[in-house]
Length: 121
Image: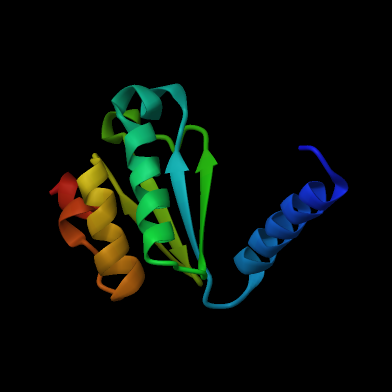
């Protein structure tokens, strides 16, 4: 950071992110980034989400990190919050993340084969 203008730009981006989370219709993607998730491959999954969302210029999506989601054997795990609904995706790869962006976030179709319900059957 070299100037007040840069600091102001960072502040504005942060405020927009917070505003987005509180707006109706916004989507929040939460990636489990505890040591269990990282060891299982959560970093490439998160980067795939970030890259795909940026590539598609999705403005209503916020990506955040969290610690342990609670089922280490199912990592990498991602929770997608849309309004009152929460979908939990498990055992993800970077390719799964791209598919979730295309199908779920863009087209509104849950990628059922990647959900915790499909895995537990």
